[in-house]
Amino acid sequence: MKTLITISLLLFISSLYSQTFNNYIKRGDSLYKSGEYLKSGKMYSHAFDIKHGNTAQYYKASCSWALAGDTVQSIEYLCRSAERGWKNLKHLKTNKKLFSLHSVEGWNGILSIVKDNVIKHEKSFNLPLKKN
Image 1: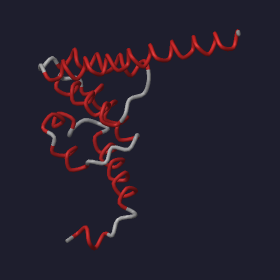
Image 2: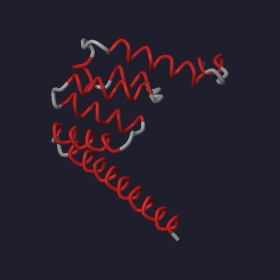
Image 3: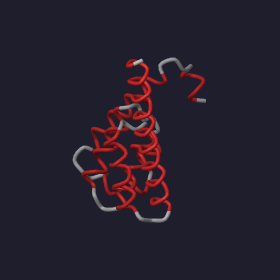
Image 4: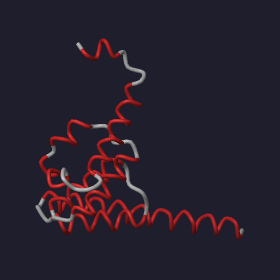
């Protein structure tokens, strides 16, 4: 009986954390869309205090922080996105929201990580066909 109560309690707590994480992510998305980039970045940060995000969530957080003028936070989340497998190198290089990072320490390292992600991803591709 104790085991059942313990498991039930753990599942309940786990679902609360997941719900809170998702709420912060949704709120971050909403604030971003309304142009409130600083508040958006803070919502993403609160979410990541609860649990790890995915590549897209970290990328969106990076864009929020960049547009809010905080290149340190932006680079941090962009690095997390890259380390977790972000592969869209073209978008990364051309995204106007991230232009403020191009001269910041850490930018070139992130590009290298993303290039490696692309190479690993494309290993199984038929590259001669891809080039055509």
